[in-house]
Length: 571
Image (cartoon, rainbow, N blue to C red):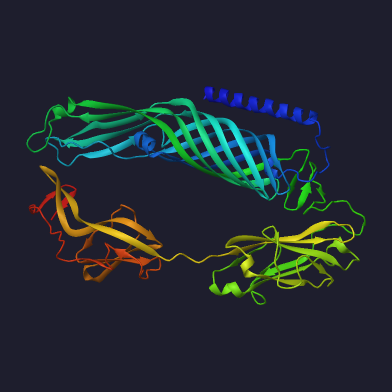
C-alpha cells in the first residue's frame, strides 16, 4: 500500500505542475482573447479541463481468467483531463489534444470451482466428497495509476475522446484449494487433492480507451470502453497423486494416500481485461468561455448573445434582440399526424406509403420573441440536416408577416434520410441583420426490417448419461435420444423442433452449439422470432429435417443390478 501511495502522489504532483505551466502559458500567449469577452466559436464544455468520476465492470481475458480462477470484476476510477493544444475551433465543433491521468481500483470475483479428482479409499463407508476453499476473501483486488494522452472531439453536446495511457498495475495474489473428505473405518480423513495460487504482481501496462460524453451543461455524463494489457502474472497448480496404483476395484489404501505426492505446474500469463464504465464528468471553464447549443457563456456563467449562421452580432436598432420564446412545431404526416415542439423527438415508423406524404413545419417569432418587436416582418429559414430544405410552397427562406399566427411550410418526405434527421428554424431581423434560432427538432425515420432467413446444417449426435457404481465409477450408456450440432447462418430466426408425441420446442441458434436432447422422431424447421415459418430458409438443404429409422440412438450397455449405494440410487 505504501508503494501505491507513492505512485499516486507522483502522478498528482506531475499533473499539478503541468496545469500551472499551462495557465502561465495561456496568460502570456500573444493574441489570447480578453477575459470575459466571448469570441465567435469558443469552447464546447468537452474542450475544457475535465474531472471525471466513474465505475463499472471489468471482464478479464479468457486465458488469464482460467489460469488464475477469477471472474468478472467491479472497478472505480477518477480521472483528470488537461487540454494543451487546440486542433479545431468552430461553433459546432471543437477539437483539443491534452494529457490524461488518474487512479483506480478493481476487485475480481474469485471463482469457486472444484478441481482435482476424488480417490476411493479402502474401508470407506460412503463415497468421498470434494470441497473447494478460497483464501483471503472472495475477490482478487488490484490498483491502477495511469497517465497518457487524450484527444477530445466535441460536436454540439457530445464529445468523443480517444485515450492512450501508460499504467502502473498492482495485483494482489490469489489462492484456492480442493480438499477430499473420506470416512474410512469410522474415522474422517482429509486430503488436499488440488491447490492453485497466483503471485502478487506489480508492473507496467497500456490502457487504450474510447469515451463518449454528453454535456447538457457544465456537468455531463459519459460511457467508456477500455482494454487493459498488463504485466505477466505467475500461476502455480499442484495436483495430488497417491503413491502407487489402485487395486483391481480402483481403491487406494490409507497408506498410499498418506504417502502421495504433488505434481506441480507453473505458468505465466499476461493480465488483460476489457472494461465498460459510466460516470459523471465536470467541466472547469476557461477564460475564453464555451459555445453550446446556441448560447455562449463566459467564465462567470453569464449568457451572451450567440452567433448563428454567418451573420454579425452588431446591432443597428435596439428593438432587435434575441430571446428564446418563439412558437414552432413539426408534424408528420400533414395535417393529422403527431407533432413535437422545439427540442422534441418525432419517430416515423416504416411505411412504404410515406414517400407521398409531407412533413409540416410551423414557425412564428411574434410576439413572444422581442427580435421583431414592432416589426411584423422577419425572414425565416428551415434547415434539414444543416441544409436549407426544399419546401412545397413559398420558397426557403421566406418572409413571415403573420404576426403571432404561425406560417406553415411543407417538406417532402423524400428530403429526410433513413435514421436521425435534425430540423432547425432560424429567424433573421431585417433591421439589424441579427440571426437567432427558434429551435431544433429531431426526426427519426425508421427503415424497412430485414427479412428473416437462414441456412442450417444440423448434425445428429446420440445423447449419453453417466452412472456411478462401486468398481465402475464412470459408466456411460446411450439414452435413446438425439441432439443436433448447429452450423450455418440465421438472421432474425430460430429453430423449431417437434419431437416424439408432437412436443414443440424452440431453440435459439448458437453457432457450433448443441440443442437439447430429444426423443426420435424429430422434425426441425426454421421460424422467425415470432415463431412463424420462414419460407426462404432450409435445414440440410431440405424444407424439413426429419429423423426416423435412418438414425437411431438405442440404449446400449448392460443393465446394472438394482442396488443402493449411500447418496446414489441406481434403478
